[in-house]
Length: 331
Length: 307
Image (tube, rainbow over all chains, first blue to last red; front, side, top):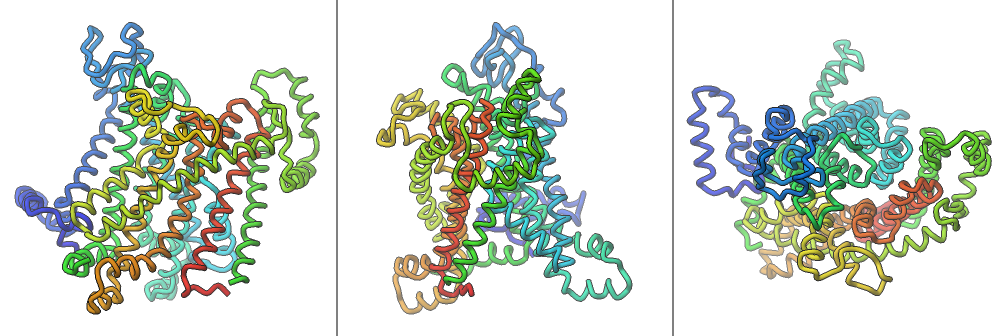
C-alpha cells in the first residue's frame, strides 16, 4: 500500500515526512485507526494535495456561509466609490479587493459568485455523472445491441467540438442556470459512460458476478450492488476533474453572455462585466479570474492524487518507476 | 491500411450527416427558428411574414430534406445582418481562424520539450515545476489570460495593439491572440509528453540501450521519442480540435474576425443562418483534423494493423 508519498510528491523532502509523522503522532490518540491508514498518511505528507484540499474546503465553506463571511452586501451599490482600488478604507467600509463599476465590493461578489460557480460545477458534474454511469453500466453489462447503440452515440458526441455544441444548445434554449446544467449534462456524460462501460465489461466476467447470478440475483441487483460500487472509484476521480472543467466552461459561457445573466452573478459574469473597464480598474478582472484559476487548479490536483492512489496500476507506476528505473539510471 | 482509411472516411461522412441532424434538431425542434431571428416583442404579422419568407410554415420533414440538400451543397442561405450569402462570409472568416489556429499550433508544440524536460528527471524539482505549471495552464480560463495579456503587454507596456486585425500580414495583431490560444495546449502537450516518455523510459529496451553504452541523448531522441511519438501524436492531435473551442472565445476577446467571432456576433444579432453555418463549418474543421490524426496514427505505428 501507499506507505510512501505518491507520485511527484515521492521526493518530498525529509522535513515534509517529519511533519506528517508529527501530525500522526499528535492526532494519533484521537482517531488511531484512521490516521495510521496508508492513504491518510500519503495524503498528509503530500503538501500540494493537502494545500489544495484545504483551499477547496475554505472556498466551499465560504460559499455556504457567504452572508456571514462577505464583508459587504454583494449587490449594494456605492456609486460614489466606483472603481475604488484594492485596500481602500472608506466610510462605507473596507474594500479589500476594490470596488467595481457600480461601487460594489469585489471581494464580497467573488464570495457570492462562488455559490453559482461551485453549484453549477457540482451540479453539472453530477448530472452528467448520473446519466453517463447509468448508460455505461447498462451498455457494459448487457452488451450486444444496446451496447452498440450507446457506444455509437458516445462516439458521435466525442466527435463534436464540445464548446460549439454547448453554444448551439444554449443559443436555442436561451441562457440561464437551469439550461446550463442541461447543457453540461449533454456535454459531459460521454466521459463517464466510457469509463464505467469499460470497468463493467471487465467486471462482468469475474467469478463473483457469476456467483451472484447463481444464487439468484436479478440483473438490476447485480448492477447496483455488485458492479456500481466498483465503478464509483474511477468515476469520482473523473468527477473531480470534470467539476474543474465545468467551472471553466461556465466562466467561458457567462463571459460570452450565453451563461448566467444579471442580476445573478458568477465568476465568469464578473469578468464579462469588468472587461469594459479593464484599463480603469484592473482589479475587477484580475481577482475573479484568479478565483477561477485556483479553484479549477485545486480540483485538478486533487483529481490527480485520487487517480494516483486509487488505481493500483497507476500507483505502481507513480511510485516505483521514478524511484527505481529512473533516478538511479543516467536518464 | 486502405481499407481502414475507407472505413474511417465513411465514418466521418456519417458524423457529418449526424452533425447536420443535430443542428437541425436543435434549431427546429428544441427551439423556434423564427424566435431565434426576431426579438421577443416582434408583432405577430411580422412573425408570420418571416415564417413564410423562410419557408418555416412547411412541414418538418420537408424542411429537413431541404436543410440537408442545401447544406450539403454548401448553400447556407443569406445572412440577415450582412445581407450577403453566408458561404462567402464563412469562408473568409475561416481563413482568419486558420491563421490564428496555425500560429497557436506552432506555439503549443513548445509543450513537448517541456514535457521531455520533466520526464527526464521524474520527481525532481524541474518535474514538479512543469507538472504544476501545466496544471495551472489547463486550469486557467483562456479568455482571462487574454485579458491579462491585454492589460499588461498592450495597456501597461504598450508593446502591442490591444486587439483588432489588419490583414494576415500584420503580425503584431497576431502575437497576443496566438500566445493566449497556445497556453492551454502547451500545458496539455507537456502532460501528454511527460506521461508518454516516462512510460517508455521504464521499458526494457531502454535498459538494453543503456547497457549497450549508448549515450543518453541517443536513447532519448532515437529510441524513446520514436515510441513516445505515437502516443503524443494521437493524444496531442485530438487536442488540436480543442483549439477550435479556444479560438471561439479568444477571437471575441481580441476582436479577431474569425469563425468564432462570427458565431458570437451572429448569436447577438439573431442571425440564424450565420450561426448555423459557422457552427457547421467549425465542426467540419474539427472532424477533418480528427480524421487526419487517425490517419497519421496508422502511419506512425507499424504494429497497428487495421484490416
